[in-house]
Length: 177
Image (cartoon, rainbow, N blue to C red):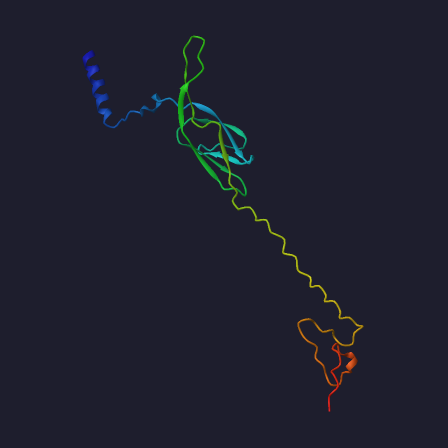
């Protein structure tokens, strides 16, 4: 009788295998460790948002799972957004009192610092307009002389109506008869 019960139980269990699936083996893989990620930017006050959904205003620290390929996007008004992709690394931690040293998982780039670039180029400094040239007034001609004075480059023009005393040249010799 005992054999019959064992065979029946085995039969039911094998019959159920065709429609029954085993749960995935994901429960054997450990969850990634939680790491404190330090975030900073220039200028400070940018919003840092991780691909995991956590966000803060720089400078700040976030608790995130140390998964490779984590993205951090920095945004700030009047600046171009910038995204940094982080990779994880393992290194030996502080030794324990018993002499063993744990393996620590952390991001390769921690703290994360980003210098944001302005979205609009800075305004160019305008040069002041050139000074307008002020025309100098011409000196008035001397009012004492009635006739204009002859210049060195042009000889004076004599007119028949002009008196001989007004001429700068000596009078001509008398005509011979």
